[in-house]
Image (cartoon, rainbow, N blue to C red; front, side, top):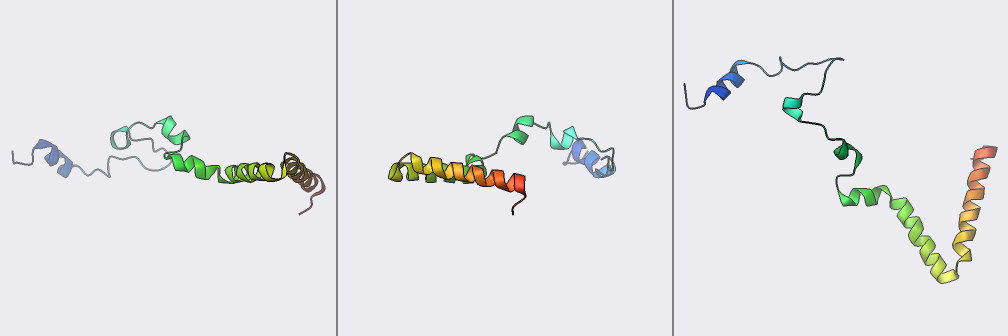
Length: 96
């Protein structure tokens, strides 16, 4: 046996591509890819990813908070009611 060992001899003698399934019946290869974790698929991988995902919502909250502090409670409520009325008209009257 040479210095590379038995594992490298087996790896060199059997092509890996011939062992993998391909086509419509391909399954998850546990030896190469490991176990799939459902938690990693559902949750964002970085804290900033969640923040970026909710960017528009956070921006609207900040704008309404600033508007409420400057002009009082009525200003953001009025804008929200106008926005909901506009959405209602767009949905029911097909206005674009």
